[in-house]
Length: 116
Image (cartoon, rainbow, N blue to C red; front, side):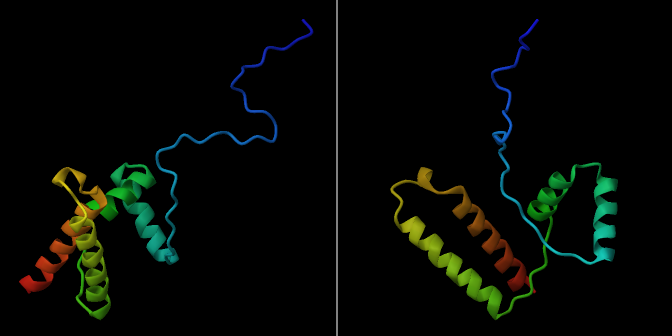
């Protein structure tokens, strides 16, 4: 038996394994040691993987926004981009989901600011 069988899909030395991952973007942020301990505790109690915990926390939790000039400038710029996108559409089926989500978020922020 002079020859060893090798799978044709085996990655050769020096080659990188292809990544067929759907989530290929990395998001980093800095926290203090105390904040990290609190976050790790919440993750452990949730039973979710870290990535799922952060995604759910960022996308599905209520955030309190304090209206200031920076907030209103960002909203104004994004509304101008949304307007430009919507003016170029032929039908409602062409609306980009990111645009729709941005508009929903802006409306929620403004609704909460003006309720007070």
